[in-house]
Image 1 (cartoon, rainbow, N blue to C red):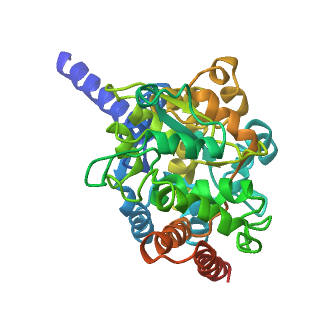
Image 2: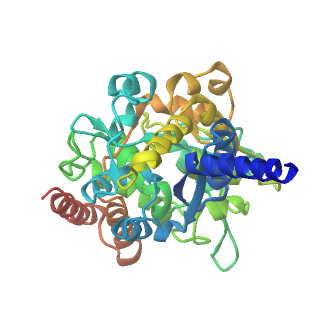
Length: 416
């Protein structure tokens, strides 16, 4: 009798275990490797799994350079991620490649999204449907080394482009051989300078980089594009403030204390927070002499993979709801340093008055979001454009005209 009861107990336990296993579902979340982003997502997954014990989320990461290729290959094998992170500028490629699916309207109503998120979220909308939502948004700002400014007797960061040039010349230091020991400002088109040139300097010179739907390049329609490039390249060729390629990357030079200023995004805060050798600050990008300000805003969105269906799709929708919530955005802000994508979560008094977050947030109302069709290729046209001036001595006007022709071809090919 006792044996029968024991066996019955074991059978019951086995049934419970089997039922629990049957009801559990595992989904995969993919993003590229960036330490603070991975750390933040680990925290979000832990919180989500605690609130949803029937769902397990496996985070999978790849190097940035391999990320898109891995997603395409996995999708072809029907082993793609259930939820993935993608740069908003990749949206057309991911939609046309059937890598992601539209968000369900009943869970993510378009009107509610547009009411609660910053306007740049619309870059993930196609034909009335949203294909992804950001946890955080990013803008650009000027990072400055307070110690180097104090040594040079400069009270604070530049507020105008003329001051940027003036301060940069005072802060740059060369050795007896004429090589830079410290640059006044980093020059890094492969970093964020291509955004600074395109959406900030071109507009400050009186032009616009593209037409309203970003289907036509317009920075070569007047002198604005050439003037913007001339201002940028003169920082090296005429003013001796910095040099393209100095220490390979602008952010590396700044972290090493060998750059007095660098232009970068909010995503850099997580890594700059580890700097111990000097104090640094953040300021809005310098205005032109008429006080015109501009900025570039961007984000990585979270989207649901096209292969997610059934229980995995339901779990993916729940997970996307959480990682685009106010709670998730606050964690992302604290760990990564990127700004909450929801207005109410971002525009708090504490955030606006914060000496680090405040300048980035102040830029969002006047920031522009480039609707890339191929972000990597379009970025390369800007890199090549600057290098033709730096390395080949081409005039800024001719180099801008060549860049415009190349970029227009990229846009036209993508839209055909």
